[in-house]
Image (cartoon, rainbow, N blue to C red; front, side, top):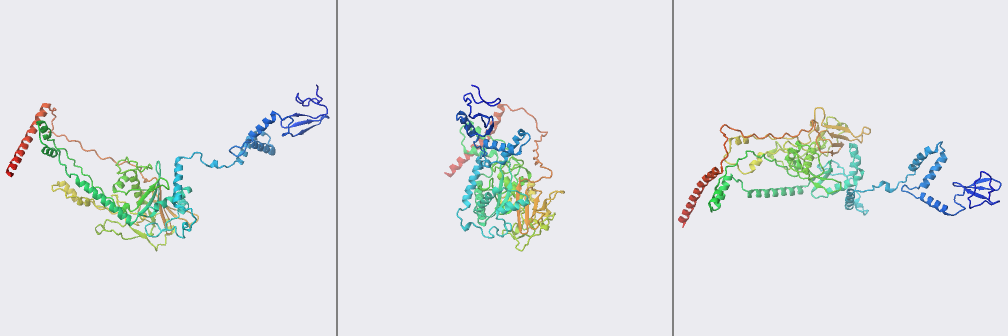
Length: 612
């Protein structure tokens, strides 16, 4: 059957024949055309209405549902394409295909959905989990969940007591120290670590026997870093530690007394053994009667070990604690010895972050990294702890000895209550005339107060009566005592280099000088800072714990080799003896000894007979 449609019109599917007087529709993409009898056409949008509700409708619904799936960004492909088409129709660019990708990128950027997963690390390390658990335990330990008034600090509670030991008006408000003062100095501290810092200092203050706790600084390591805190020992704790040291020394002296003082040459030892044991046959007699030649005696004399200063005095006046992460348990560093300070001056070694790391250096350092860390802290504190001139004043020490007035320096100071503070202009003087050291200088001996090595010899047992003339002459020569600088010595006397000053000083602000602070940085120990304003002063260190060397590090020179044996004219080369000659020589040594023993036995028998 032929269709009544005009030429050029769309024909319906074969299954739908055309009927006169009835509207016939033919499908195009997205719309249908309605054709009337008179040939007029009208476009009708029939997207959701279909003549045939067959498989096509099902596939279309499935496709639309698939495109409408919402992804991780919070939108779907269907909405994204719809927005792009709308954007193109609004702007109507000349070449649509060139702007399609740009429109897609802009729309995705404008409609970015910020989900919580976007800011959470997908993989959390075990170290982060342990650190979070540590801070949670500290939070439960120090923070009370009950809203009581006891947790609210009173006015002025963050100011420390002016007892002279700690800095004046000590900053107990750690947030002010970390986020206001340190940024002015030029040091950064993560804000997320503020709470951990507060917990760490509170945990240190709860350790019994400590007072005047303060944050000393941070020393970087190759693997881990060290957070360091400083504290003073109470009088009771200091007496307890001194008593423990005395008890340990007594036990060591008792153990030494049990050992023989002089073993003597090998000949005397063989003779004693010969007298104690009975000679049964010729072989045993030959074995024990053989007299060995005397062994060479070393002429080297071990130098006297310099005595370490007692806890709470000198280089051990302060006690130091370290931890790797804020909030961990503090580890107390042992007291430093003069030998450790002397060797630390001769080596340069970076810290690893492990306190038990052995020190493989030359000269050999007497201890591990924990001792090396303590020695470097003592050196930095002695050189870089400064304050404005007039802030402290000296006081007499309680344990002053009249015999050591010429060599002993004062170590105690208190806050001057009448001090009104130095002006900012005075503190900014380049020559550092208005700054002073409030920490004692370390002598070349490794101590604050000079110690006479001769006193150690006098305390031991009396020397032997027969001494060589050379030894007597050496004893007559006495070592000259060394006297260090007194406390509160001007920083202007520090010497570093001809072209570089020991300290640089600057203002924290050039805009508002009313709130500015004077900041002094050390060129000798990079990382040491001192800042002051009026009556407030503080010292802090952030660095690698190494001293700046002007000419680079030069390894310590190894000692000279010992002299070889001097060959004389009376030395002749001979052949080795034969076994027969050695046997004859041994027999010649045995006979005199056996005869002497027989005589002694006869004498003993005669004495026994007389006694009977």
